Amino acid sequence: MMQRRGLMYVLSSPSGAGKTTITRELLNKNEDVVVSVSATTRQRRAGEVHGKDYFFVTTEQFRTMVENGEMLEHAKVFDHYYGTPREPVESALQSGKDVLFDIDWQGTQQLTEIARDDLVTVFILPPSCAELEKRLRNRAKDTLESEEQIKGRMSKAADEMSHYSEYDYVIINTDITLAIKKAQLILEGERLKRRRIQGLSEFVRNLKNGL
Ligand code: 5GP
Image 1 (spheres, rainbow, N blue to C red):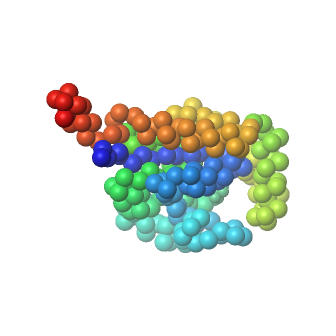
Image 2 (tube, rainbow, N blue to C red):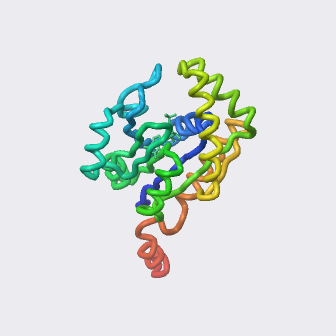
Image 3 (spheres, helix red, strand yellow):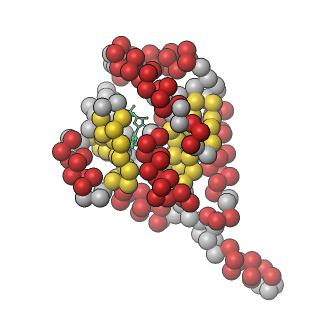
């Protein structure tokens, strides 16, 4: 059997564009895909689980992780620190798994610098500003976010969206089922890329030699 190099699949979008749902569905559909659980200094929201949604750490703990080189990338988003712990990603990739990242454009730029060949980047856009605001307001009912926090997210959305052109793919999430399908197609297409398949030249040599 030919081995395939695991790929790093980045999904970025402004909050509320559907990234969390798409990530969850990709995980459900693909048993050889794992998600990178980030560390953050922000408060845990209602329903979030430490170690599953995030590793919730203090600023001091976060700083120590950065200083010890334990972060693959890190950034300040909405006044809090977020970062990708290095070790779980490296061991998943080594075992041939694909890794999903829900990170912002700053983190994506850093991963592009260190792992361009393994990286597939997808930017998810909402169909309109009105729809984005509606989704954020709906979500705020569950997460108990304040009006001020929603406004903050709307203004950050414009900044985040201006980075769409740094990504390999863009999905406009008008219909979530279709958006999930597109994210899955991108994953499957990228897995077929020649450079990700190991042992191909030996395989073809054997084919040519009638083996
Ligand atoms: P939230 O607080 O809504 O969970 O996430 C806020 C933003 O931080 C989202 O855009 C999310 O993609 C980004 N984010 C989450 N984890 C990381 C990370 O490890 N690194 C970076 N650079 N951004 C992250």
